[in-house]
Amino acid sequence: MSSIPFFGWEAFYDEDPHLQANQEAKSGRHYTMYHGTSVQVARQIIKNGFRQSSDGMLGPGVYVSRDQKKAERYPLRSPPTDRVVLKLSVDCGKVKKIDKDNHPLQKTWHSQGYDTAWVPPNCGMKAVPSGLEEDCVFDPARIEVTDIALAPNTTILTELKQLIAQNQKSPSQLNTSGTCTVCKLKLGPAHTVQPCWGCGETICALMIKHKCDPY
Image 1: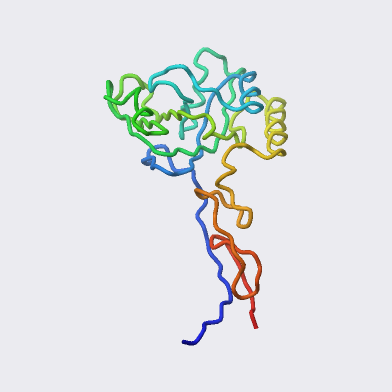
Image 2 (image 1 turned 30 degrees about the horizontal axis):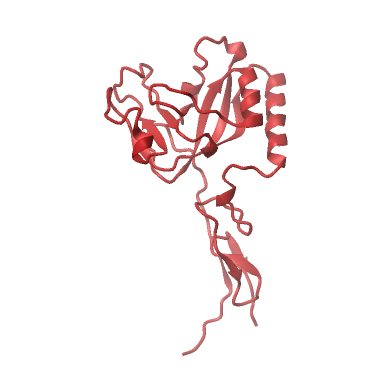
């Protein structure tokens, strides 16, 4: 049997996780989402991470949305001068769709093995009069703040962005298990790396590009 020389590859990945809010959320995906809060609480979230609420329409968890307009409404009793919208990267895990009032799993979905509850837009639930998409993520560790989508003014915007940058200088405890040290992608569990059988360089099969000349 003759051997075939290996010269490498070049791949292209669609890494945009920001599906529109009206597209169905799927299990095992990372999504760009948003969370509305006050200025002071935004500071605490960036520094210390999210905390799970004790209850809510979908039970305990962190309430977020792929629709920025939904997040901009919160906190409901706060003036626009005290509202911040955090941009997030969310590992949804296993997703359960809750699309009607008094759904049998409306508050117990996590006990049935789900990580995120998803309320589709315009599904008719009286508990969501805005008709805008909403999600509840049970484990705060699945959520990472990546940017500021909205701030009251440029001073606060700059301050919060600097806090995010400072927080990202140290190794994050979020999503690190899914980051490959070779290809740098966050696609599920850690990837297997090995020496290239042509040039001997350490490679990962999910690297965007690798080129070698074994001869």
